[in-house]
Image (cartoon, rainbow, N blue to C red; front, side, top):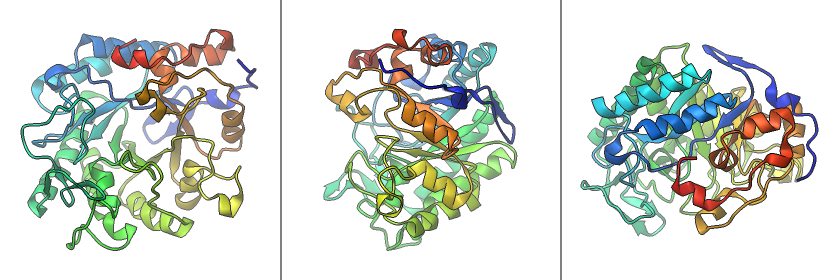
Length: 373
């Protein structure tokens, strides 16, 4: 594979509030579906422990759902509630800490999205307006009581994460799932205070989730919010088409209590507003940092030739150099970089990058999505 310049910028320590990391590399959250009955077992704990042993700076778990009747869209997605599931997560974080790692759960509600297997929850799925996307009805519109209970469930899950000993919490507000469905005008057509013509108005639900979660965690515990412009329902859609719209979206969320914006792109190197700063301009995480002053995580097809959505179609990817990433990290465009499929396929990816052992980097094989390597 192509040679990589000095990766020192990836291995600088990072400190924010109570969080201290050995390097700037984050394991991106990736749905695995290996928790029957919602309970993560020893195989899940071993999967995360292997990444901690191999120098991942911060591990973010697969999406793990809140205590709502239909908060998941696949049978193998883990819960983050209930004695058995929380006991499984306690084993995970204890094993990660024993291996010298840091970790946070990604707290999730899948909203009106459909799973890939065809599995359906017993209760009707819920979303802002009973829509998965444009012209795609699914489930029921949430009442204000449903919304209040959902906000409380997010906060309760976050409090449990802190109690179990996790180092951070991430709220999943991206990729067309519940929180994101409130942001998106195509899935949020409410006429009450949780709807509205502007993105700022439609961000009210997320801001209330964040505020309740912040109250549950206290002021010094780091809170991450994952966001995306694209949706699985429409890869090309954009919530914020200008920096002003992005400010209207993100600043209220920061004020509500977000510490770190995890800015998901399909390809991290793509400029967010090329009409302003060119094709080599700031990416989503770069603009989020510039506009809000918050810590940001970038993510999107790091270290591999193909972008991650193609993996669901069975496409493999080969290792590529990190020159572009190193350049952006050295410029401090964003603070942390999340890596997904490369670490999913190879638990030793970080160690190999650190030691310069790039000839031993593994290609991504979609078959690895069906096992816990």
